[in-house]
Amino acid sequence: MNWATWLMSLAAPIAKRVAVALGFGYVSFEGAALVLENAFASAQGALGGLVGEAAAILARAGMFDAMAIASGALVASLSWVMLRRFALVSS
Image (cartoon, rainbow, N blue to C red; front, side):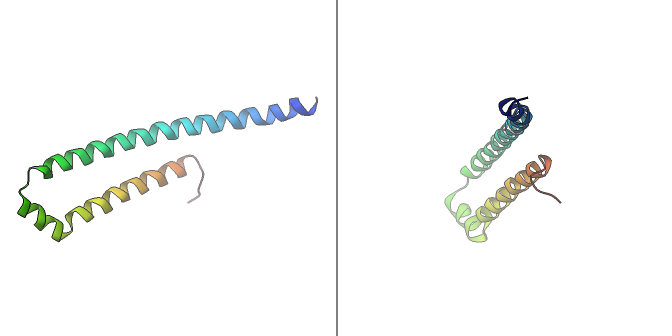
């Protein structure tokens, strides 16, 4: 067994595992991005019909900041789940 054969026997399973992990990660990320984009579009559509005064009251109350924080938490949670699923972090 020469060096090239030995290196290929080591590299091939690792490359396959990385490709599968990236493929599932990409599909999961794109699915989550699509869901979040649709949720944002729905929220914007629901808030788009508000009159200016009502939108100003919601802005002063911090509603839009709360929506941004909640969506950021969803993205962070999904990222953490994916990292744990692919065993890139422990705990």
